[in-house]
Image 1 (spheres, rainbow, N blue to C red):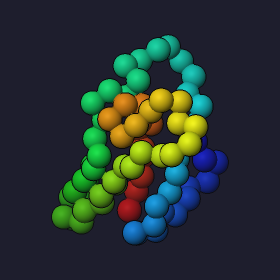
Image 2 (cartoon, one colour):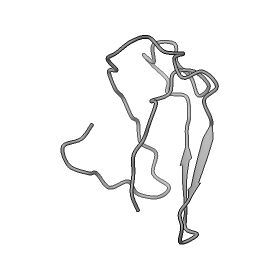
Image 3 (cartoon, helix red, strand yellow):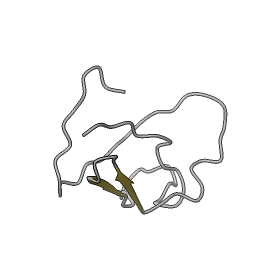
Image 4 (cartoon, rainbow, N blue to C red):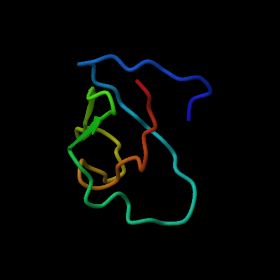
Length: 73
């Protein structure tokens, strides 16, 4: 969670890293590679997820995603 909103630019890849606290979950099973959100004004926002090399604690596109991204346009 950021204290202030951050700007995400189109066509730029970002890495999101988080330490989650709380009870065990299903570890993000059945994750999606692409999520498209269409607003009431018909504008679309698309999030595309990639596997991250390195120390990813056994997660992938399909397993272990961050549970929620809150954004505005």
